[in-house]
Image (cartoon, rainbow over all chains, first blue to last red; front, side, top):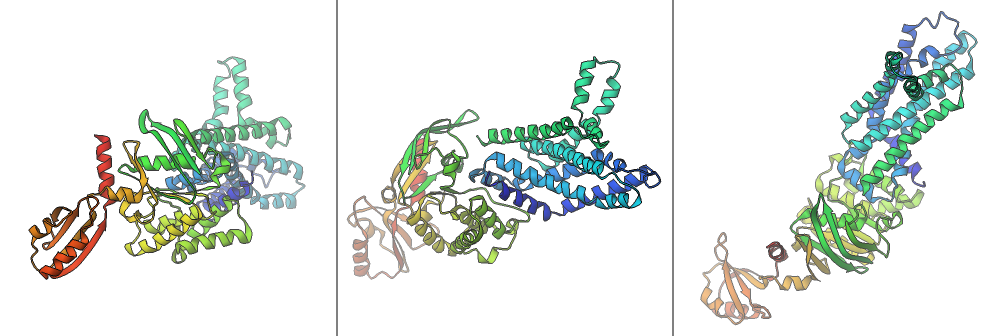
Length: 241
Length: 306
C-alpha cells in the first residue's frame, strides 16, 4: 500500500505530458456543452438542474474513456518496461489501483471543468445545487466503472488499438442494453428482463441523474468498479507466474 | 547467499532447464556462460523471482525470491531494451527510486550516486526512447544498483558498449563485487575473464561446468599459447621441435603470424624467446594468451548437445 501514491503520481504525470489527454478532455467538454445546447432549449426552459447535459455523458464517455484507458497502460506497452515492473517490489494490487485512481482523477477534472454551466444555471435562475452535485457524482461513478472495465481489458490484451476498440465495444454494448431490453420486452420471461435491467448502468445512472440519490445505485457502481479492478489484479497476478 | 537445488523449468511442455543446482556466496562474481541466451535469461528470471521454477527450490538469503520482501535485495538489469517515449533517464531513475521506497534528499542522493557510477551525465535529460543500446544498458544497470542490492543480476551488460568504455565497465563491476554478489550472463566470455571469480557453463539446459574461471581457461587449447608476428620468414620446424610445443597454427589472413600451442603444464615462452634471440628474427609483436574462453564454452556446449 505504501507505493500507491508513487504509482498514482507517475500515472498523473504520464497523463499530464501526453497531448492526447488534453485533446480528449477538450473534445469531451466541447461536445458536452455544444450538444446540450443544441439538442434542448435549456436556456429557454426554466430548468433548475443540468440534466440535459448529464444525460449525454454515457455517450460522450464512449469517446473519452477508451482514450484514457489506452493511455493508462501506455508505459507498459513497451515490453522492456513491463518486464522491469515485474522485478520491482510492487504488488499488482497497488499497480492497478494507483493507475485507476489517476485516470479517475483525470475524468473528475474533466467533469469539474464543466463548472461554467453550474455558474450559468445559478446566475439564470434558482438552481438546485444539491441535485447538480449528485449528478456530478453519478457521472463520475459511471466514468469510474467504465474505466475499470478498460483497465481490466488491458490486462487481457496488450495492443493499444485493441484496447480502444474493445473498450468502445463494451461500452456500446452497455449503452445499447436498453434498446435490447425494449426489443425483448414481450418475448423474454420477466426475470430475464428484470435481471438485465438491474444490470444496466444506464438506468442506474438516469435514476441518480434525476436527483434520486439512492444508496443502492451508488453501491452498484462501486461494486462494479471493485469487481473489474479485482479481476484486473487477479489476471495480472496470474500472468506474473 | 543463493541456493539453487534441482531446478527444472518447462515452457510449453519443453524442458528448458533440467535439474540445475548451484550455490553462490557473498561478494562473488559469477559468470553465466552458454550458447543459448534464452536459458540464461530464464535462469536469471527464476533468480529474480519473476518466473517460478516448475520444480526445485530457489532461495536468496534463505528466502524464496518470489516473496515481495526479498525483491528489495535484488537488482536486475534485463536483457530487453528499456524504452519510454516521454520519460527522461533522470525521471525514470527517480521513479524507480521512489518505488524502491526512497524519498526526499535520500532519493536524490541515490539517483545521483547511481548516475555518477555509470557516468550518465550527458544523457540524463534525454527521453529513454532516443538513447542508443549502450546508453539504455547503462540506465538499466543504474536502475538495478540504485538501492544497493545484495544480489545483482546482469543480462548481457556489455551489449552495445563501445570498446573504449570496457575499461570503466570493468572497474565498475569490480567495485560492485566488493559490495554485492554479482551474476553476469554474457555471450562475450573473454571480456569477462578478468572479472568473474567463477564460471557456470549452461548447455542443453544443464550445468556442464561450475569451476573457477582460471580452470576453465586452462582447458583451452590456447592456454599459454604464444602468438608472434615476424617481419623475416620464420623457421617453423625449429619452433615445432622446441620442448613443450604441441602444435603450430599459421594465420592464413596474416602472413608471418603464427600461434604456437603449448602442451598442458609447459611454459614455452622462455624457449621461444631464446630461439628468437639465437636466430635474430625480427619480431614485431609477441604475446602470450591466457586461453580462449569462447572456444571452451563452445566446445563444452557441443559436447553436451551431442
